[in-house]
Length: 119
Image: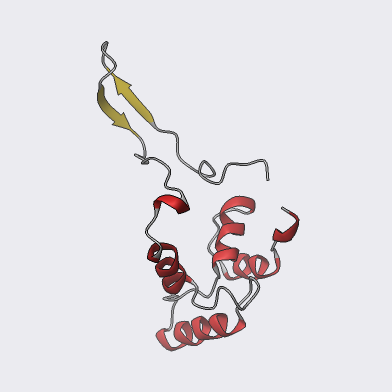
């Protein structure tokens, strides 16, 4: 993949320095330093997966049960309150698609998944 995932869809940001090189201000999003897996406590990636996509290791990128749960929850609420996309689908949306939030976009996103094994 030629794009740096850390930089994809990031808004432009500026850091202003004085004549001595000290930071005096920021304009735009303030983004901290990159955190690598080695720098994280072991529980952090597991906690993220548990919160975002509990079936991450078993569904292969598309989770029909999660999608059905979200559809049922949204139906009962009468409007959109839950999403059924997986971490893989969210990554595809951020990197390869637009940020459109419609049912047709969600349907397209379900079927747009790159072959991660070849990347």
